[in-house]
Image (cartoon, rainbow, N blue to C red):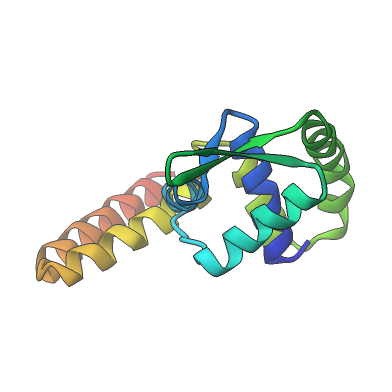
Length: 148
């Protein structure tokens, strides 16, 4: 399943937890996986899902909140069921991404967030300290693995 399919799945999953604006979805996906989808990907996807009857738009002031419709929930459930079939067809890397999707504590979700924090530290002139922290974590993990 391509990146756009993953984005669709994330959007539907997050909206199954409650209504959100496009901006909130972008920020939540960034927080969850460490990758910020572009507004140029998210807003057309929301419109397409809305046109397809999977989402409903609810304007509130100058914001638009998107909600999963009953049809959207059924579609998400179908995707969730078919996911097991897809996993069999995917390579190891793609399987790891999907497993991370299921588990909020999966390391695959931690690493992109760490990379994002390192970028932020660099942009704030804190590169030396960020490197020290990463090197310490690397050394501690290496020691853990060596211990057996």
